[in-house]
Image (cartoon, rainbow, N blue to C red):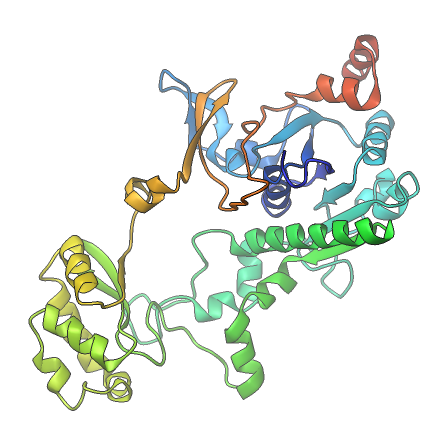
Length: 406
């Protein structure tokens, strides 16, 4: 039994931030009901290819995007624009501990599904709203998109190759970090609200914004600006204060070298047969290496291109120089440490047979995370939930289906 096996979550969210949160809660044992639009479902059901393949190697209808964030949930299809659909949501909310949604500000109020409406049927309800810019402020009515928020929140201003180098430009992250971090903050906020409710019996409203989150996770970079009034800039994969602390090319790919002191620098260049660089007064001390990085780095790149990535990693690990490969995802999942930790898991799925997923990184000794269900097909559990939670008969369900409410 998971740590949250006593918690019921009604998930009205779509795409990434909300579903990331509810997958965390589901992994921890919560019973999560994912509400989707009849006939269409979550937008990410259509964000393919790639798709999961069945046992014969043919594509199923399950997109890689959707399955990455929706395991351990049950799917029900409900049309919330219909009065009967709204009534279903209200009844499900009455039986839930947590509701999470990511509609535009004020959109659910017209259906009577906002916090103020639902707290009337469930006084101790925990209700979490995720939007681009929060419930108040001049931007509150704007739609929120991760890419735009990465730019607005400062992340892209410090990400990308430094000015003056080939390819210099602001860059977004390779994954939707504003969405993912907002989902993580939503998870933490909901757990805090559950703890408060356990002590006081009170529910509460949670207002999370992608922009707030993006600025918060800039951490020391944002703090550096507030302390100095100096605007941080892009350094690519390099460090502004340590050289070499960056990516370097090898004969068959890239590696990371993080020589944080003079001794590690000496060991690095000695391993590459260029020990004289550590004796050169222009490079012997880190402040000098930082000052003369434009002359030093090309010399280091010439050296590192003479060996393969694997040869360099073996040499530098032996020399106690912090280093690591830059793996593609084939290399990630073939890595011996990744295999030892069982990061790739296989779960049964109704259309794919066995579906490959990335395991949760949460490892609890007393209440371990488990995958109870693969990501659901659209509306897979509609009848089951309506019977179990609302006590509806087969005839009741048929009527709702015929009038398009489910």
